[in-house]
Image (tube, rainbow, N blue to C red; front, top):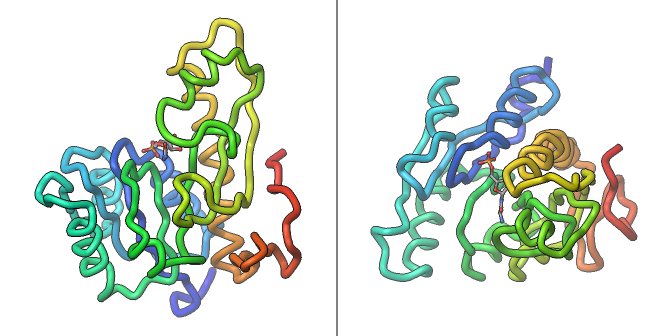
Length: 217
Ligand code: GAR
């Protein structure tokens, strides 16, 4: 068992179902992740992930973006909400908002995101439908450090899945999610163990510069 004092304080931002959040909770409770989830924040009041957090006694906050007139005002409120917790890591787990440069700069090198595509292919939304429309035979998910470029930060780890001829966006999304739930805890574990860092040249894993993302196998 990891001593509580050695656990990395983490805040998780969500917008929806929170299945990645659940995977992180499960892997924390299983002892795989030496982290302490201090708070889960959602911009969507109905996000099911909020219930998932509450079910295991994790503190939650709703910060609804509709109550703010500008992106800057929302992100300032988010910064204020987070500041007292002084987290070591911010985990974006299906948080469907673009963050301002001010926010990103505050947590540069300490913020991870998971994206449902093999970045740099298909940044942005509707990745599964776009993969099907393009006729790709391989798809997947990526975990990356968050930088100012949308879905463009240095990639840490990726997992691939086959695209089947009869796939719909939903069946493909479900297959990708299974892999997301494996690679996100792995990347968070590396960070929590001090093995993963963002340097000016890219991602360092065990002090070695990654020339390409780790591929989950
Ligand atoms: C996941 O597929 C995640 O990769 C994606 O949203 C889904 C959230 O699912 N994130 C993005 O598209 C961010 N650009 P979840 O709420 O069940 O974890």
